[in-house]
Amino acid sequence: MSVFDTLPLFVHAYGPLAMGNAWVEDLTPSISSYSHTLARIGGYWSASVGVKGTQNYLEEWFENGLGRRIVTMDEAGIVCWDGFVDKITLTLGGFSIARGPLTNMANRVLSVYAPLNTAVNPPTVGARTVTTWEEDLTSQYKYGILEKIISAGNTTVADAEEQRDAFLLERSTPAIGHEFSPISSGGEMSMTLECSGRSGWLNAYVYIQDAVSGVSTVTDKITDIINYSPNAYFQVSPNYIDGSLSLVPAFEADYNVAWTLIEELAKRRSINGEMYEFGVYANGRAIYKVIPNTITYMQHMADTAQRLFTMSGAEVKPWNILPGRWMMYSGIMVGRSITSTLRGDPRLSLIESVEYQAPMDFRLSGYKDMTLAERLRMLGIWGSV
Image 1 (cartoon, rainbow, N blue to C red):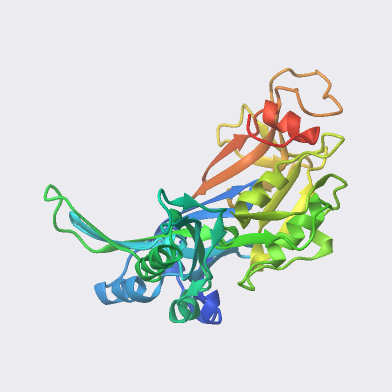
Image 2: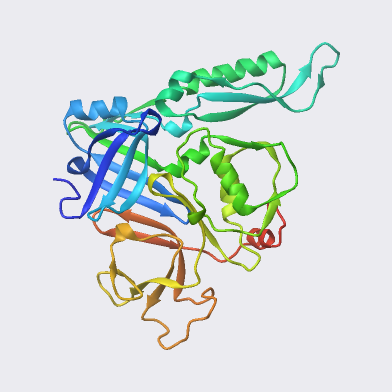
């Protein structure tokens, strides 16, 4: 019996995006547990899928399932989550074997190092430089391009290249891990799929823009970073990317991971204090939008079922709740007017993340007020605080 037997939800599996995204199967009847998380900054973030079946069935998934696309949708065909299998764990009694995470792999690697001149005494150290990229095309064909930068320290070019090549050899195939506890034994084999949203692919490459200096709008820079991806897994459309007049440096030559840069940019407020949501959603669609100054959801404190409703009174199923929306907790401070800015009203919460667990459990995390670092970013002052 599937955890979805009484729910209008379906989970479909497709081949890895790198290998064409072909249909694999309807996973729904085999699911024993399911949860997913959505984030205001990130979109479809993570999911965990427990699967039951015959040993042959589960072992086929273990061998071939890494990178497969997982899509959850409701009975109306609306996508509730879209991502890929990042790690697979098989468990039998006290023994478990894990394959992945895929996002820890690397099949395109370069070394950053400072050249060490050993021809003089004492040796001298030159300015930072990088090796060329070294690649594993077989791994890229199966899993997609996964870039990693390693620091080789103060060394010779030959040693920096040797470290690069050794790292590539180690990381170009999925890691395998084993655990055994003799306390537990027996039982049927089970499988857990730990999944990442497609935003996880923003962690799979570095962004370099050293052709021009000057400034760029936040909107243009986010768009440029996404389009720089070596994997064609994202959709960028002006219809889903709001304009931002905030200006940031265009030059990027520190080999930063794309997600690191986008996360920092997406958290930046506008000059007027507006907040944004950023995420990768169904079919890889990237969304960067100003969060409206309106209330979307309401939860009645006296409701023993703890359901969520729209402001017009329609019930919202927990798998359809979205982050980056304002929610009102009704039943406290009755009669008090709502402030026009929404912030500061204890009855209101901006949803930072949504955690859904089948069949009907959910947890909402609210945004905490602005930190000093965020206030400085509003003023265009960057750096750590």
